[in-house]
Length: 135
Image (cartoon, rainbow, N blue to C red; front, side):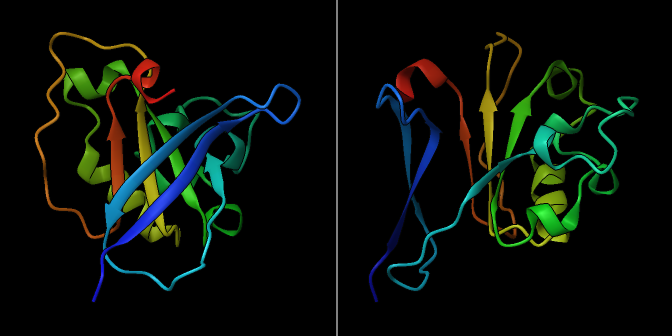
């Protein structure tokens, strides 16, 4: 039994050839299996309603299950995490309830108050704390 590695292109620009790759050691999956990535902002049920921002992946009901199912859900780390209104556990619950195969939580701007303690979740996931170091 070997560990599987998930290789995900977080940002791929086919014109320039630039890419941000992430490699994650996760529970074993079938070999030669790939999953596409979908940003929470692109999976909104109703994009004209912005009462609840979807990027922090806290409310499954604002995201379209058909678009997320079988993909890796890309979420953004917002001030709501620092303020205690959002959590990584809720991201994992949202992704799992929508049928995602995993999640990526990208921290776009670091706050000194941010804490990234490891927590057990029921779905493969990774927190990228510094996007510039993943390029």
